[in-house]
View: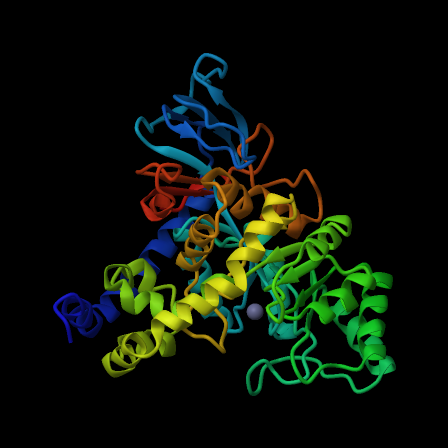
Length: 441
Ligand SMILES: [Zn+2]
């Protein structure tokens, strides 16, 4: 055990119970505060990064009324209502809440609520669960959007279609025939899912089963989101009209032809880097691993794996340099080439994936957009990828109701203590988080 890790292990041993007590106390307080009406809130003096990718506004004012942004812009251009509660944000940085298009949250309902709150406290105000959700949990996702309890605005793809899992016992459909596939899609429609997920992993569904899933989804008006890591599967689905992709083709280097194809078809990609990096990142950053908000955002088994010093030593002493280089080679040139060409790259992390365990809610989304900058995107573009552009992918609209700080949009906000443009790693220097007009941190 090195000296950095020691406080973390001590914390882990004594802090668990206290943390849960604190956590539930907070949840009870937040729930109580839902009922009370409040005055408008004016956030004054922050540098405003509105999520659209445009130049930040110095010395801004953002006014929140109810669950909406009433106005936002430079001081002098925005009137502060007389009864507003003023929040002095001088020296701080105001961003839209983050959006994660690729999570999983197949947990018992009470645990789902707890992880959602943990995710929210990291400033992730919208999430999409991309498969492996049991039918009985689908109504909970709608409740997040009604504000029945405090959570990110959450969407689900229900069980999803996968030949092999992606882990033993995962709730998925594995149809053998086109007719069975269509029946499965109709049952997802009856459940009220928001999306339909297809894993294009090996072994693959036969082409007629894939075509039946996509065609029936279109008839039932359910958008399809697909896990794809090879060029042939990408073409197969894109030719059927699918545009919303998780991961990226890794079986061959990105080519100008592939970029042109993606652009012409308006394809979008959530490269899901955080899940690739998380096996080593938290061992390398015990300061982040030891944060109570990070521990709250992991499943118990993931916490255990990351607290296992032998596992850590093996990971850090293995061929880690080669693993890192390989991850970057498989993803960074793709991200750079696609985003330079205007193909939408957005934040999705596989946070909460049972098969991973070590990809936490919340922080993973920050790592994803930080790695977009490492891959060559400008900080403002990476922030847009994690806010407005990710919202556009989920909402399937160029002008979604959330994801930007504009008059009339949802008041989902992230206030930072340090400048994310100067250093993208500052996105985790969180001062406050607002969801639908209410401070949650
Ligand atoms: Zn996934």
